[in-house]
View 1 (cartoon, rainbow, N blue to C red):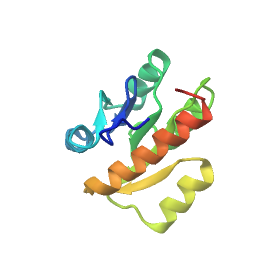
View 2: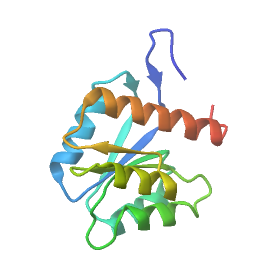
View 3: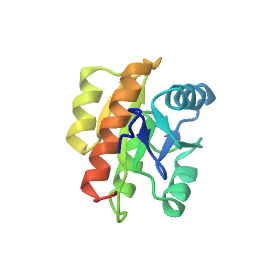
View 4: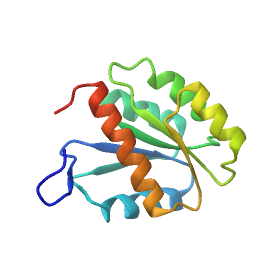
Length: 141
């Protein structure tokens, strides 16, 4: 919900950044906390296993997931999260974000694909769209 100042009040909104690369987490955090989001929490996970633990503990609306998680992949996380009561929308991130990855991701149910290095405006646009969609799907006020 937007406030009178045009900022998004994300009171309990959490974005989960899943990547083995620390620079991904730093970039996502810096981009999103400098944006129009207020009270946004950015959680991080370096492995698929840690991301699964986070998903079981916290209601997460949006995940940014590196294409290559070893062991595992963004597909495993998408499959697991689909079984949750309020599944998060998954955004795949990759240095090689080509048309093939984009088509595969969307066909399997991901929300979108973001190329790295991240473009701040694109990250904000995609995350906000995913968050709004998740909020509408789950009737979150």
